[in-house]
Image (cartoon, rainbow, N blue to C red; front, top):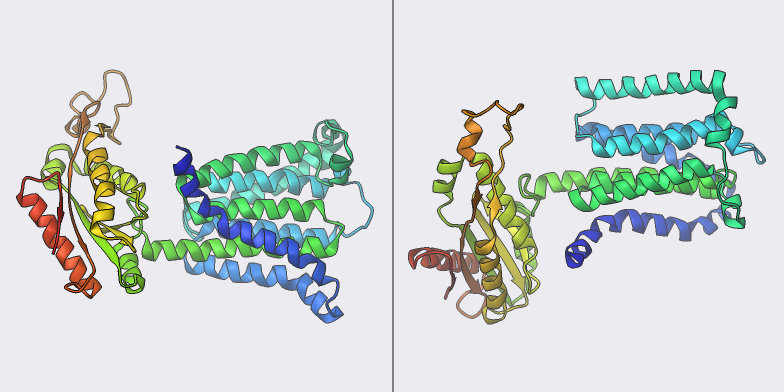
Amino acid sequence: MFTRIIKKIPIFVVPAAILVSTWYLVPYIAGLTPGRQELVAYAPYLVTALGMFLSVHFHRGRPFLALLMLVIFYWSSRTFLSIEQFEPALNKVYQAFVLLIPLNMLLLTFSRERGIFSTAGRMRFVFLAAQAIGVFWLFRYNFAELVPYIARSYIHSPFMNFLLVPQPAMVAGAIILAIIAVLVLRRQAPIDSGMFGALIAFFVAGNWLTTPDIHAAYSIAGALIITMSVLRDSYNMAFRDDLTGMPSRRALNENLHGLGRRYTVAMLDVDHFKRFNDTYGHDAGDQVLKMVARKMMDVGGGGKAYRYGGEEFTIIFSGHRTDEVLPHLEELRCTIADYRMALRSDERPKGKGAGKSDRGNRTGRGEEVSVTVSIGMAESGEELKTAAEVMKAADKALYKAKNRGRNQVCRGV
């Protein structure tokens, strides 16, 4: 379990790198010429414009809305909150932003991508506008009654007193960050990790609102994190398999060029997959492919798994011979064969007596099944000098495993 979590942590690398780099670069802003300092102050608008352009190009409504909220906050802070001494807990505009932006970031992370100009995308704009109107009305006529709840200090310490963000908003923000972090680890989605990193940048910028260099730098960082997440998401669209989430055949073809002189290629195929699909349905077949992909991505020996196509998969062991990877492939084969998978159906009955003759029964609702895989492997060497030759030899070894009765590992030439 712990090892699996460690493998998922790299999804946070890009946001963390931008946040840490920003912290180290902030002291250098004061030494810039006035013209360049002015450019830094306008940089959040430029980075946001780039991110919005990419969001429109790739039809990504969630990052577009996140960028819109962050840039409105930055503009408002420079326009309405640029006073050196002000009481943030009693400022209506500031309170509205620190309470609503984290909440909306959470909602965007939970929601599915619906595009920008679709009906659902337009409804999100309406929802944000309705929020703004509702908060304006609420704070204008009831702000005094809300202050004891939204401006209350629970902990009195020099550090907490130093922070501008009121403690209720800070606590709510910490809970929201924790929820988004869990979603990021589970989904491994770049847009979600972008929301997480941008929300951290938002809180840093909000806490150092009266320090122009830090405020501008972290506003840039937040916009840059989301912009990078759009680029990473577009890369995944091209190089990752939609169903399993693992690298696709296109990524495999790209990575085959930089393997070096010594490596092993393993080709894996789900046994009797067509028969399984015919018996239990395509939804159950998708379950099988997802399960096999999860097990393959946990393979030992430094192997990197790819979906080759259909029910075929590939694992690359860079720098290893077949003798070294054989134990890891045998362990993978046994793990898949021993796994009992409970089939589920998306067409579940809506009532206790409903759905008895439902087609979902065909998918074996409540039934446990298992599958096996056949694996063929080959290594580079004197006889197999190119990646294409190694792949072909591994494929032949795979069919040898099938002809010998399946559920086994065979070695190629």
